[in-house]
Structures are given as C-alpha cells and as structure tokens.
Image 1 (cartoon, helix red, strand yellow):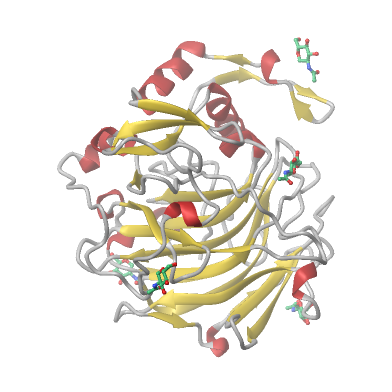
Image 2 (cartoon, helix red, strand yellow; image 1 turned 45 degrees about the horizontal axis):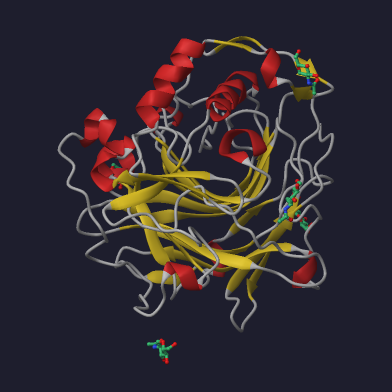
Length: 404
Ligand SMILES: *[C@@H]1O[C@H](CO)[C@@H](O)[C@H](O)[C@H]1NC(C)=O
Ligand SMILES: *[C@@H]1O[C@H](CO)[C@@H](O)[C@H](O)[C@H]1NC(C)=O
Ligand SMILES: *[C@@H]1O[C@H](CO)[C@@H](O)[C@H](O)[C@H]1NC(C)=O
Ligand SMILES: *[C@@H]1O[C@H](CO)[C@@H](O)[C@H](O)[C@H]1NC(C)=O
Ligand SMILES: *[C@@H]1O[C@H](CO)[C@@H](O)[C@H](O)[C@H]1NC(C)=O
C-alpha cells in the first residue's frame, strides 16, 4: 500500500533554476525563476473575474463565472455537465435552515454575484513554492508503507478491506507555527490503489502551509492524484480538477477561529463522499454534519480507479519538510493523550460511507493504528466510541523537531 505523494506530483515543472536558502528560510526575491512560464500558468489558472473581493484576512478572491472555472480547461472535462448539488446525498441529512453566513466559513462581508463562484487567486509565490516543494522534498520509506512520498512523517488510522464511498470527521482546528519549507495537515485520505502506479486518491482536511496554500492561518484543503505520480494532481484550485459550486464557502478558505490549548476546542466537520448517480466526489464542510454544505466536487472523469470506489480510508496527521531539516508540529503540537480533549488534537465522529450510501461509524475492530515513525515526535491513539457527541475518536499529534 503506497501513500499519496503530495508534492512530487504537482504540475509545475521547470520553473526554478536555482534557489537560495537564507537562515534556513528561502528568500524568494533571490530565486531565479522562469517568469514567462509562471506568467503563462497564472494566465491559464486565474480567469477574468466578474468581481474581486479582498477578504478580512487579506485573501484575494476572484468571482468567476461558474462555467469558466479552471477545471473546465481539463481535456478530460470537455463534455462535463456541471452539477450544482448531488442528486443523491450519501449519509448525512441536509438542513435547509443553514446558510453559509451563519457559520464562520467562507465569504463574510461581501458575496460573489449570482452565477459566479469564489476562487482564491493563485499567486506567483504559490506557484514558485509549489515547484520548490516538488523538487526539494525527498522520497523515503517509513513506517512499513513503501514508496512514501517525500520526507513525510505521519500517524494515521486505517480502515480497509471493503469498498468505501467516502469519509468524514469533525477535526479540531489549530493554528500551528509552520515554517515556509514545511507543511502540517489534519486530514482524511480516500484511496484506491492496486499498485503504486495505479494509485488514485483524494486527501482533504485542514492544512497549515504558509508557502503553497498561503497565509498564516490553517485552511481547508483538498488534494487529488491519479495514476501514482505519472499524471499530476494538486491542491485546491492549483490545477484543473476541483469544481467549486458553493457561492460562499470555498476550497482554500481560512479558519479564523482556532482551539486554545487547555481552554477551548474548535472543530469543523469535513466530509468527502461519492454521489451514487454521477460518481463525483463531493467535498462538504460545516460546523456539524447536519449543517454542512457542499463546497464543490472532484469530477468522476479525472480519476481512473476512484471512479468506482475506494479501498482505504485513513485518518490522521501528515507533515512534511526538507531533508535533514526540522519537521513541523502536528495536531496541536503536543503528543496526544486521552485525559483532556482540550489539550489534544482530535478527530471525532469518524465515519465512512458504505456501499448502501450511508454514513456509518467505523467498526472499532477494523481500525488499525500506525504510530508515528518516530514516536518521540508524533503519535496517535484510537479512543474508540467515547460516547456523547463524539463517536469514534482519534487523538494524534506531536511537537516534531529533528526526528531522524
Ligand atoms: C532577500 O534578498 C533581498 C535582495 O537580495 C535582500 O534585500 C533581502 O534582505 C533578503 N531578505 C532576507 C530575509 O534575507
Ligand atoms: C430553522 O430556523 C428557525 C429560526 O432560527 C428555527 O426556529 C427552526 O426550528 C429551524 N428549523 C429547523 C428544521 O432546524
Ligand atoms: C496563527 O499563527 C501565525 C503564526 O504561525 C500568526 O502569525 C497568526 O497571527 C495566528 N493567527 C491567529 C488567528 O491566531
Ligand atoms: C478500485 O478500483 C477498481 C476500478 O475502478 C474497482 O474495480 C475496485 O473495486 C476498487 N477497489 C475497491 C476496494 O473499491
Ligand atoms: C503505539 O503507541 C501506543 C501508545 O503510545 C503504545 O501503547 C503501543 O505499544 C504502540 N504500538 C507500537 C506498535 O509501537
């Protein structure tokens, strides 16, 4: 079973000829980049906006005609008929009552005009940094999983052995300090993999990555890949795959509320599931499962194996950094424990979507825990069904550091 290769699969090639490191951090202004190629890619990715909104946190959001978003440049989507919402909802019931503005996500002050969707503008720095990650992050083997992409350390829960049609959890939100050359996620993997070359996957959750997805805040992210690393996949809207449908809650949006250690936890319910009729993989998010909204989807056509179903659902943390460098914190930056949920990173209400299209609890006995490769840096524990609003729960995380 191979893991997803996050960065080696990015689309961007031949952008940087040299890079310089200053005090362990890159100095972008010194990098020699192929400006013409970058400008070309930016022109292709950033469509002409109907309106541009600068959000409270400084994101530049372009309101793009829904039929003109980047995904439609993908030749695989030439004949794609856009879906505004899945005809068959798997698992969760929908509440008619909740609008995007009543939760703390997405556009707040200003909205996009009707017929358009919000898309965070991709900057030159995003592209340069994505390329930098793709080049500099080295492959190693870790934790019994062969061909793990790059210098990633992780702790995860795995369920496997059946056909899976989605996964969901309420994940605690933490504003970790992560260097420009690092990333740290709380995420769910949905994978169908026969061999490494044939792997298809979607990863989604919360990511802190100042360089590629931008900014100082943790963000909602989604990543797709198919055919191992032969065919590119990538983050959010950074290549032609994800179709944004929600007029307010957008992929890449920041979380402005984070948990405060020992005082208060904030969490968010995030789900990806396959709609039975179309086979598209929808991303949903909200304060709870019931109030979640569809954000958009990865169309069936961009996948090979994942067109039908997934073979593995995995929950946990995932971090990356450069070789020989310090690794970032995971979760809330502390090793997990089961005594006090305000001082640990967690995922509760862990569910998967079964063949009947229902969102169900994991069978505790089918859950396998993979402790971090380096337990002094990261760990994970499965708490099982802890009752109340919590359901199946994992706690995970760690301080990172020099973890060799
Ligand atoms: C980055 O490079 C520029 C130009 O060489 C220089 O002026 C600036 O001080 C450098 N920044 C850092 C953080 O080293
Ligand atoms: C919808 O919202 C109204 C007003 O907030 C509330 O009274 C009502 O109970 C809600 N209905 C449902 C089904 O949640
Ligand atoms: C999140 O952490 C960054 C430093 O990593 C800091 O600059 C920022 O102010 C923090 N934001 C919030 C909302 O706590
Ligand atoms: C993986 O994908 C293949 C091709 O779509 C499908 O036949 C198979 O059932 C999938 N595996 C699982 C376990 O869902
Ligand atoms: C994983 O970590 C747990 C909790 O720290 C420990 O009890 C268990 O023995 C570890 N398992 C392995 C295989 O290292």
